[in-house]
Image (cartoon, rainbow, N blue to C red; front, side, top):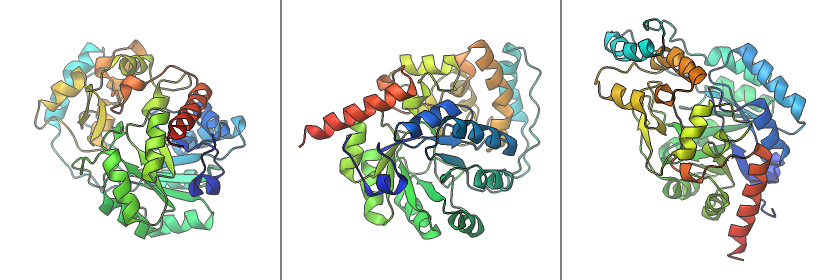
Length: 355
């Protein structure tokens, strides 16, 4: 491509593209390995895995490539208070019945998984470790540094970016409001400031001294070129990879992305209890209509898991968490390698127009 930044040199990348960690099965070892083998940086989204699952997934990546790859989990979260969840159960019950499932029950597992997953991430062979929803404990940061693992935190505001830099991260992903999936905000009760990528990235760059990775609404080489010209040293792309042949999302999810319009997405807490951007569907809209019908994260995520699993098996998009960013009209059905090649060509052409 001919594009090189300091971050790319440090990480041995020949493409500025990082594949966003797509927790919940959106990324696959085949996708992660293909991105890294093509000169970018693939990630394993491990936030919902078990320690054993992390080992199996990263073993599968290493079996496919010798290139570096990353792993992602959530930062430690505060404990969830005991609550009355009857409204949430009543709201979800009709959807469970429609899918032939037993009535939903109040989730009992609200333990934070960080302590279980972090040791597995350390032993995974990943050269990069990224996280979202806050900062890491000092002890965890020290362990990562001791192993010479490159650490990336996620920020949705300048204040969050500064806090991440102060905690010792090596780079920061600046997540604009356009991004699909969960908002990286430190605040579990709200979406935080919904600053767009084009506005957020240069403000973060001006406020910190570590490299900044642009994320949110970037779908092709034009977006990559724009981010680089703003001063970003790489980009993180998620929605663009969801519809690849190697993408692990259900076909109903991929099809919903391919046919959606530019105003199809909205931010919701309906599926997980935490703000996330996805394509609006019946479950999202009807659940949001009930003021007390959504449990806090991660209880709502546990509550809806059986429904989402059943919907994926029968191809019912109206029950799925259709995570996607605002650039869905630019989605493509390609292999991961074909997408990486197209992104490199498009970025070079876009930058070439300006000499």
